[in-house]
Image 1 (cartoon, rainbow, N blue to C red):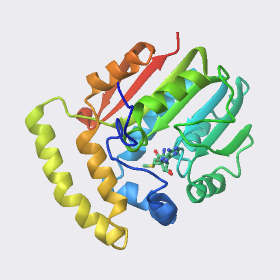
Image 2 (image 1 turned 90 degrees about the horizontal axis):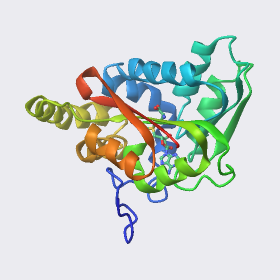
Image 3 (image 1 turned 90 degrees about the vertical axis):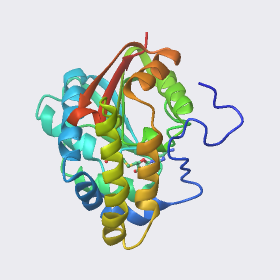
Image 4 (image 1 turned 45 degrees about the vertical axis):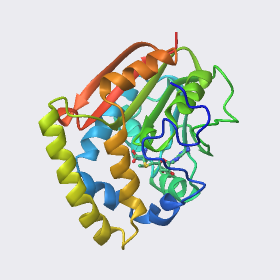
Length: 248
Ligand SMILES: C[S@@+](CC[C@H](N)C(=O)[O-])C[C@H]1O[C@@H](n2cnc3c(N)ncnc32)[C@H](O)[C@@H]1O
């Protein structure tokens, strides 16, 4: 994947947090917006990812673009008292407002948690070959994929697991087109009401959903970046997919 020469190449939503601090503005409303936009189904998708993380949980886990912490919350709920193998769970995001809500949600946990302001494109502060499991949910479409994947590869230990939950494509073309028409009509309507007219909250999401590569194409991007054993699960007919890969 060639990302040279453009800030937004490989970024399905052409989003840059430096140009628009939308997540800082909507942080307090983010969880409600997720419920509205997905009819609460995002909870199932996130639980599916958390179950996979919990199955593989050991050593150092890094959740990138953690937002309000939905993934770490679910992982720790799944693990319960079985956190002995987990040396540390790092919840990170580029947006301090989102991370502070995550901190609040995770305040009562006794697990070894860390919070960090980190840019997925440049995880400085995370040493190379230091992470056993890297996860990213619903943020790949608003990032430059090649840069994010390269950083994920750098920080993962050999044999470490990469997991990405992201909007994808319903394999049946006509059904996917019908879904996009529904989203084109519904998102602006719900978004305008729930986000108090803040168009950014749903326009990036819509653009990302439109332009994110298919399951197979994204799996190939992972392979091109050097990941091995790449597989994916389609969730809810392929509206969302969970991709997994391993650093050789
Ligand atoms: C759609 S939310 C997803 C949050 C959470 N993972 C979830 O599934 O609910 C996207 C998150 O990505 C964060 N984000 C956007 N660009 C980022 C970047 N370059 N590096 C790290 N986080 C970023 C935003 O601040 C926001 O919290």
